[in-house]
Image 1 (cartoon, rainbow, N blue to C red):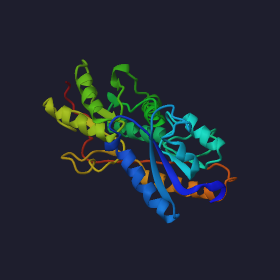
Image 2 (image 1 turned 90 degrees about the vertical axis):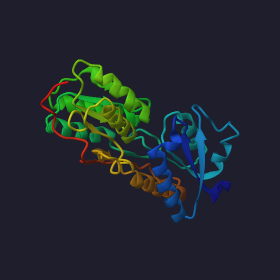
Image 3 (image 1 turned 180 degrees about the vertical axis):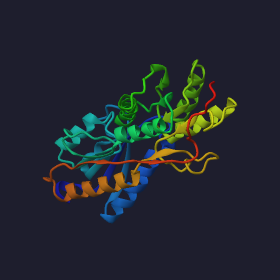
Image 4 (image 1 turned 30 degrees about the vertical axis):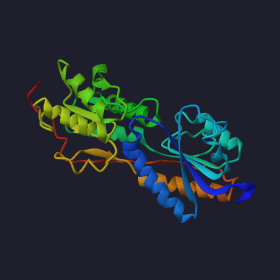
Length: 286
């Protein structure tokens, strides 16, 4: 390869709590590792702390890779710019910005959340709680934005007490249910920003002696391996993570072959999957 680059692609993953149990990370790694072999490339995985730079000897080797894939941009903004300055082709996943100086591939989280909440409103829910993801990452705050937009478009009042700030991990699902059930009027439906939180929320609701979906409907986001296998199959929003990883790798390969190629920016639709964890609201009140 030109400029002494090694025939490898660096996969840059920002460290976060419970990352090794993350459906997002495992799916992205699976799809990217499968795709790079098609282009006769090796995959090097780098876990980064916030504000890491190429001056750090632990990741200096990234500058000698043929290209780099970012699993997310949060905490790695400076590293991305440094690699671009070094003429290393880069593609960012899970983050969309039309002004980004390189290619990006992401899921349309905002519209996916709108569709999920609209579905709950359509079947009769007016008291809908949300368990957000980490609001420092685009997926987290865009799902919250979609929740708010769906309420506004359907003229359903927003209530601050129905917004619980979570972090995508299961524990947030349990803490959120404890918060919601302390309210004078708990939500009749919960939109969780990840399936992990949704599944834990269902467990917490049942432990309180309530029924899902009879008392409280629950929907998630991901369509991970638990969604269709649990006792009450989960209504959720399916993320096209396989597609995102494959497309990102294909774009990166094109940039490696043609360094002067213009950035490609792709936003992928997600799909609502209706299962047994959601139904119309119960007529009785808490």
